[in-house]
Length: 158
Ligand code: PNS
Image 1 (cartoon, rainbow, N blue to C red):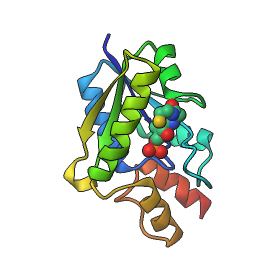
Image 2 (image 1 turned 180 degrees about the horizontal axis):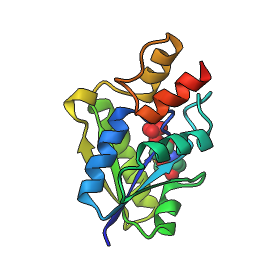
Image 3 (image 1 turned 90 degrees about the vertical axis):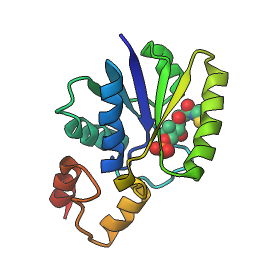
Image 4 (image 1 turned 60 degrees about the vertical axis):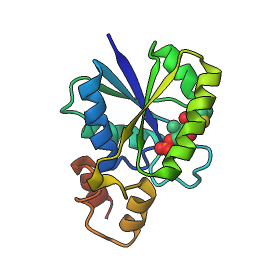
């Protein structure tokens, strides 16, 4: 069975993430969405458990996708799940520069680990969790940025 891991901090999951998840799920038998801590990103809007729950609700209709939390190294999670493929979405050159480095770090930690890049769909090229958090702060309608599960959660919090 060909499995892949789609890691990220997902604070919160966006329609851009969901697009990558669906496309990865069409390429692999099983995709693990791994909710992780990005040490560079302080003051998260959602707790890791909340982010996980929002992803689980958002992927409920995709049978070969499972979401989990992991607080350690991504390379260790890959070993744990016996998967050697990491999927990353690329929006622009800045993503490429960062992701190219991370791919090398992960390969250095675990030589069998390959990183596969999927280009962001044109509609989502400018999407980011940071942008979404900014829109939330200014009370913008969220339907065009995040999955319905996140919209529902935000409405409950208003
Ligand atoms: O969605 P993000 O914040 O761009 O995701 C980055 C993430 C969480 C995938 C990255 O920071 C990460 O892999 N963190 C886990 C710790 C780790 O394995 N570090 C080594 C690779 S850089």
